[in-house]
Length: 400
Image (cartoon, rainbow, N blue to C red; front, side, top):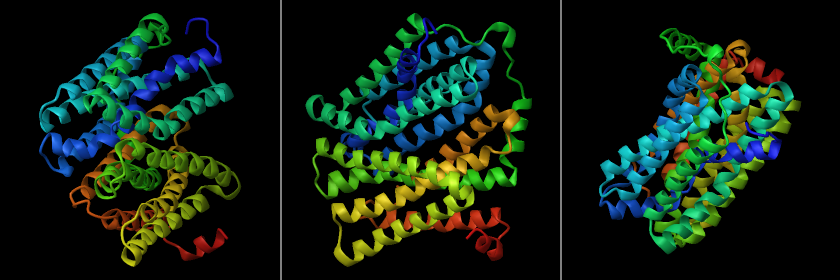
């Protein structure tokens, strides 16, 4: 990186990291409008979210090895261009099928931008300095839900829904400019490795390991609670509760703060109580949040607080499980951490996309379907936790 210092390095890579976060979050306020613009169903519109997430997950299996073979800058050029082209396609779309295809193209681009940004960190730093840089970049992803939907809401209100995607086009063009003028190649020819079939055999070996499978499944299920909130919240808050599109972003900011709070708290808890207890606390909070959402609805009807307060409890639990589950899944793979992280990304994003797709098959007329989804996720996570712990009540008691 030219004339590297910490602030400049982070600001240089931030647009690449934001491509994924903004590509998902800034679009949320206009999701209900898409059903009316394209005269389609919420389930089809939801595919523009779930396939975006799924393509980001699957793309990691290919993009990482491709950047190892062809270098970082070449992949950044292609990825930034795809993100811009896909976003422009979304802005110009006149039917839902074209929109879905364009979203997948932009997702492949955002995947490349994100993966290569983190690969550059691995090229340049190690040890504590590497961890520090990763933390700063992850922080950029974590704060996106706080303000991206607010930006999307006001853009849609002032300039129409297409302006949301034109904003993303500008982000892709910015990525191209930064690659041209500020990024030097960090993965030189003598270190490059060709993509071959062996890496996919390694992926399979990782995914079929019982420890990885259980931890990664718990993480993916927990992540689905966040993703399902992306899917159902605009219909509940904007369409049913009639909150204005620009004010929806502020409601969504609560969600972003919950993720930040839950992640920070989980990071402190896991140090003192360990992975197992942290995950168990997360599962309990998930169940309380889901059950509370159902009880609140049947006792007092649909309301903003009846949706957001149980959501805060459930999403805090999900944040606990996501952080601890990721650590547990990757723990056995110190020597092949990069490959394991890619496999974990596919597992995590793929499962979240599947759960979100199933949820949106049901009409969003209340908080009931989301509440039931949270309860089911909590129960399945507990089953996986018991599988991981040998399904032994005695061992659970020993953690007290």
